[in-house]
Image 1 (spheres, rainbow, N blue to C red):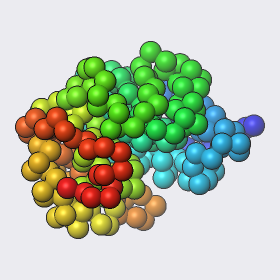
Image 2 (cartoon, rainbow, N blue to C red; image 1 turned 135 degrees about the horizontal axis):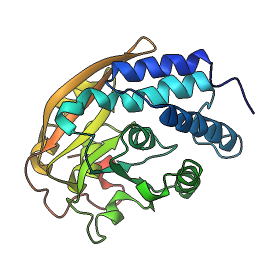
Image 3 (cartoon, rainbow, N blue to C red; image 1 turned 180 degrees about the vertical axis):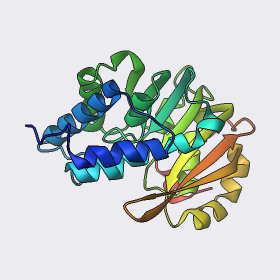
Image 4 (cartoon, one colour; image 1 turned 90 degrees about the vertical axis):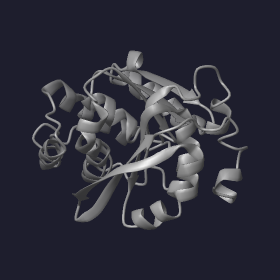
Length: 247
């Protein structure tokens, strides 16, 4: 399958958007994104990973949105060796685009759904990223019990649809003190921050910056949350409890 990907205006718009996010993609990186999309497009025909794998949506809604993390480059120092944890990675967003764009990062791709981690394993091989992606099929509540996982990671990211106070319990326990959690949010961001004051206090996080950007005329936000103190070892709580009874 070839939809003239090298000259498609969707790619041109994506490259321009990446530049807006302080990311200048090399020819090799652009080729990796093109391979990523082709692989996702074919895979999605038999295994539902995204609602639509059409190029215009993937390039703008998933790839570009993932790379908005470049707006936080000064705070995160993404051009240095760091570990990135993506909880609930699904079709690979935002973690895989992030490590394509930043070659010094290593990604730990976590999802509780086997078909999704299977896809990430095959994708990492397709893109030649096996040495930079560790795929983990697990729930956060179980993963935290494994050696060298609690407060181990420099950065955690999530584009999950869960409310912020729920996401915090699934992510902050994994982030080392001084590290960061980045939540991708939209118009409900302020409401979610307000309802997360207690969870931030308990789990040891502080919102230190909110980055604004626009995708397809939609206002988007990146919430930069710094881990300021250790998280009590009992978090995250048992499966299902964070969603049913948020902090």
